[in-house]
Every structure is written in C-alpha cells, then in structure tokens.
Length: 251
Image (cartoon, rainbow, N blue to C red):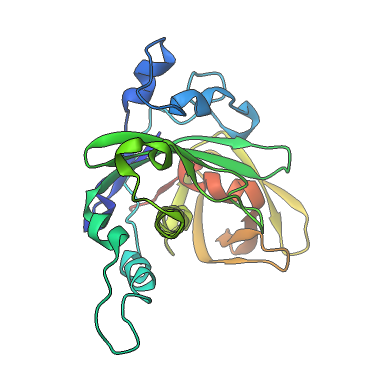
C-alpha cells in the first residue's frame, strides 16, 4: 500500500499499513463499502503478484514529494468569492484540514483495460474507503466512497463530493508523476519502447534518466527517459506503476 501522510501539509508519501489488513483477515469493516474493494488483484500488473498484496515489498524507497498541492488548493478556491468580492462560505474548504492519510490500497486492471484505484483516507481521524474506477480513462468515474453515505455527514452534497473527488484525484496524479531525475529499476525486467515503437528490455538495476512526462493524442500518460543515450517511453498502465518498479537513484 502507498500512503500520503498529511497531504495538506506537504509531507511525504511512504509505504504503510492500515486497518484494511485486519479486515482482510476476517474482521468486520465499520463502513458499508469497506476494504472488500481490494480482493480482486491482477497479478500481471505487479512484480509481487504471488503475495497477498502486490505492493507490500521488501524495498525501502525514498518517498515521493507530493508536488503542486498549492495549485490544487487554488483551483478549489476559484469560486469562493461572490460578484461583490465577499468571501462565500465553503463547507469543503472548512473541512479540508480534517482529511489525512491518503493511502493507495490496490490498483487493478478493469474490463476497459484501464485501472481502478482503491484508496483509504481519514476524515476527522476516522478511516474511510473509496475507489476511482477507470482512473486513467478519458471519461473516468467519479469517486465512490463510504464517506458519502455516512449519516453523520448529511451536509456533504454533490458540490462537496465533486470537490473532494477533484482534490484526491489531483493528489494521486501528482504522486504518480515521477521527478525529472535518475531512477534505478527494482524489478527483474521491464519492457519499454523506443521512438520507433520497437520493444527493448530493461533489466534490474539499470539506471534511467527521466526527460519529461506528458500525454499522447489518445490521452495516455507516458514517461520519456534515456538509457545509454537512447530514448524510450513507459506508457499506459505501466505509467502508474513507475513508483513501484523504480526508486530514485542517488549516487
């Protein structure tokens, strides 16, 4: 699992565990949706497919910094002023400091050959579970979470839900994007493509240098990098596993 600690205060992402592990051993989830999200795992998407969780691995990795969080906050504040310049009340912005511990529980391939991302997060120190279906599809599904059905928070309306959806989505997008630096491959091998579409096999401990990340004409995210003075790309679903397959390389 991957956790973004206190993402409102620019801390780091790291591997972690949650009550999710307890529930998978037979305990009862306190939420209606609960951790049952994570039962269907596609081992082909992971280098650790023969384990209970494809993302609990023995490597100690340098955490990725959650960048551009201020831009997310700015986007959320776009509509906080009325036509006279007075500040309008926004319940989501009032609550935003109560959100913490965003965690990636599972990433599964779906029938659209895109990915579903199962998450947990804490709201007012209570853990909730959620899912972004078709996360990397041009028309992705909105966030589904048991927080939206909790009777204690009846004030969470459609507008609030959309803001939380965008907020968590942008945090994940920012984390998936690698830094423009050197990385070392952790898995045994990885198939990549060169500029002409020809396949090339990277091997464990190969060191690559990130040039940039972007999206292609079909809206697929990709990573452009160099290896031994040649350019290659990692694209589509593999893009979202980059931070599991690579670690920053520090000489």
